[in-house]
Image (cartoon, rainbow, N blue to C red; front, top):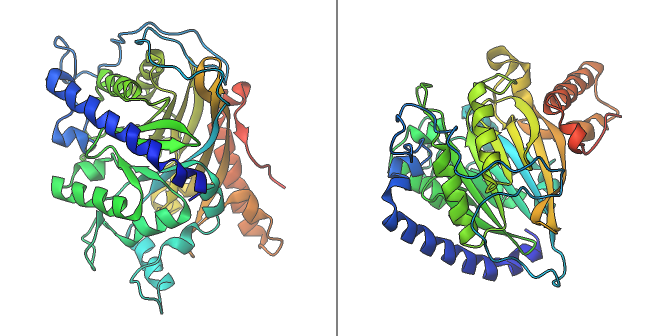
Amino acid sequence: MTISRILGLVSLVIVAAAIVSVVTSWSDDDPGTTLSTSEAAGAAPASTSGSADASTPTTSAVATPAPAATEPGAAATSAAPTRTTRSPSLPPRSATLVLTGEIEPDEAVQRLARHYASGSAVARNFTPMFADVAATIDAAELAICHLEWPLSAASTTPAGSGPAELATALAASGWDGCSVASDRMDAVDPITVAATVQILASAGVQAAGAESRATMHDAGGIAVAHLAYTSNAPAGSASPLATQAVIADAGTARDAGAEFVIVSLHWGEEFEPEPTASQHEIAAALAASGEIDLVIGHHAHVVQPLELLQGTWVAYGLGNFLTSQSPGCCGVASEDGVVLQVEIADTSAGVAVTEIGYLATWVDRVHMKVHPVVDRLGDTGLPAWYRAVLRNSWERTDGTLLALGADQWGAGPLDELP
């Protein structure tokens, strides 16, 4: 962790206390917009519209008018309540955010973790799996992952759970927070959800999408809120996302002091690089609200496109970051992932995205390590077949991310193929 993050903890505590107070008051005054215990654990919240059918996604009724499309670096405008703004006489602030895809500590991953722990005092060591990306993760003022599975402190983890040592590795590699809203988290009991949150917290990693709507982070002096939800039921049946509830939660976070709002969504169809109609509809509604600055998607297990919508960047899917999923079961793209790097800074219109780029990653399932593709291609000793696999991965990722024209708005790879 950087020293600046440690120094920011005092302000973070103040902001966190404020959001707890606001959320508590809001929940008491307006029970129609609160999330139930199961919803807070990642399940789709009920519709906030009294006239809407609960089985219908509430993505069409946006309370605020849609702002005009903006270029990167300009914040979207809306009819949101006026909030306290920072004095323009103060020095401008900036921060680097990094966001990564799905982490699944399945049995094959755990088996290699036991191998890496051989001869040590721990039973499993996941840190070597992130060694090649740790410098990039740790250098950011704020790093957020997506943890697909619940965690357990048991010496032998139950099926479908990961061990507590994974949380230690996440913290050691530089992550500050994780979204934990997923179909797998929906499928477990509240005690397991609470245990997962506690295991992460004990390691110094905040969990969004479980016991609280939002977690608050200090990123270079900028108050960043991270919210997480799922629209996928455990059995894969339709589970609509109450978009108005997400927008309301984002507004509450802003009222409590958040200057930049990230929403993680577990949505879409598995192994499909093309976003679904529902994903497009939800993304458009969230962007139109003017309350959300960045939307990050998970669940597809493959990379999906980037898109700029009315000033809000949407990454529909960041792919797999660490998993044993293979081309044999899940398609060749299941080995691909992304480190999304987002630069934010003070602008005349408030804190906004000023630059956005990405590093393509690839999972080496033999050694269970996450490799930045271009860095790995720098190894001149790679056999030709391995080099071809990596180049194909980079081209898939780059082509998919830019499929909706994100490069026209300044998005692009942070490195190029040699």
